[in-house]
Image 1 (cartoon, rainbow, N blue to C red):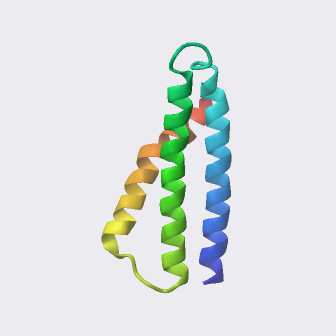
Image 2: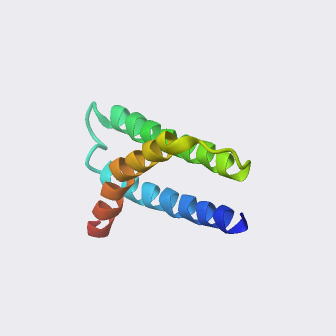
Length: 93
């Protein structure tokens, strides 16, 4: 169980760092104009939704309750939809 806690903690920290790095790299594109506030709100809303799901899934694992295959599938879809493109784009930044 301790390995799972360490993995999720390290993974969350790395994901947050990539998220912040990618945000500051792309923010300059949307810094001027009427879409800057919309971009900031949308970006952090989607990211915080994923982090809320990650915390929920983490507490389900720690409490030994199984969230089922659907919860795991949703988490993987959100991860591959949000963070894989950020990680790939951060390598270019």
